[in-house]
Image (cartoon, rainbow over all chains, first blue to last red; front, side):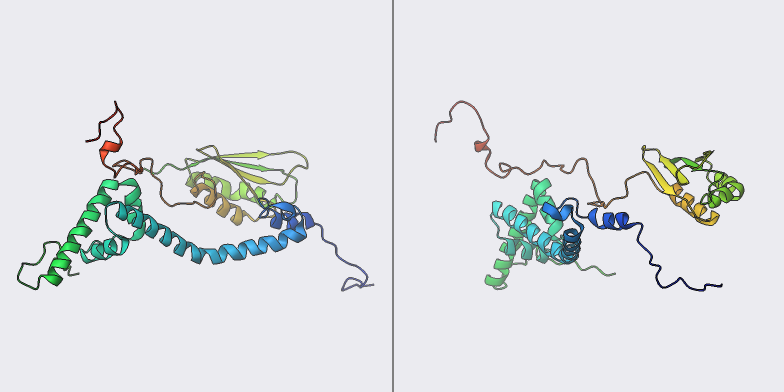
Length: 150
Length: 132
């Protein structure tokens, strides 16, 4: 007789259950407790770990920026400047260095950072003179703006 | 000048197994052209007699890494694509690189330590300084 479909009482059974389980457990190997061994607990933990790592990618940018700001604040306080004064005066002097580079300079090139702090301090003084001295003195040297035409 | 990082490609398969059909077709048709196009890669074809493990394409690189790719039940064209992919790789491990940069000398002016910006009177070690 011609059989076009499997008889209804025939069931198919999984043969590669081991590898399907290992695919999940390999991401749980460094966990603590039974979640690194038992599949049922590991599935839940691995899923939560992935969700958390996806969300943390947005937080990482914020955390790193806060870390750089802390470090720049500490370094500029060593040279007698507060962080808002330092950053605002650097921007006014057209020094477009981002916080990551400033933090690296503060750690690995302390003399460069000292000269940047001195530049910000000088620009700050010129700003005070321009605001309070009322126009009779010449403009400060470091307050000049360089215009670039592209 | 470009130095290809792939040293040798070993094609291990059994001449009678059914899943090594693509490997046998590759050896008959495309292996010579592949070897001519990549003159600095040595291609070894080693048939294993009898029923053995699955057919495998083993790539050895100049830094010592050995990478094995299964070619069971693959067509000849797919094996050619796999082989060119392995030939264009370097032998570095395929993991997430933590930083896209690396320096051996990160500090030119001397790394910061808590005494860099303090007056140098604090670092002098000698006979007891008299307070002025």
